[in-house]
Length: 79
Image (cartoon, rainbow, N blue to C red):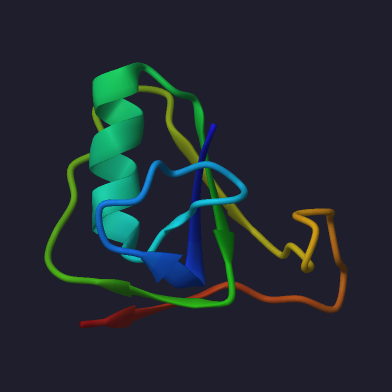
C-alpha cells in the first residue's frame, strides 16, 4: 500500500509515517511498485492527470492513525 496525506512531503517514501503529499505522486509510485491500494487522508492535491493501468484502488476516510474513521473524508483538489 501507498499513503498520501495533506501533511505529507514531496518525494516521501509513501509509508504511513512518511506519506506522499500529492495524489498523482502516490499513484505513480503505487503503479511502479505493483501496489494495490492508495490510502488518502485529508485534502490532497493532484498536480496533473494520473493514469491507473491495473487494479489500483484509491481509498479515503482515515483518522490520525490510518484507522477507518466514518467521520473522516478524503478530498482531492487541483494543485
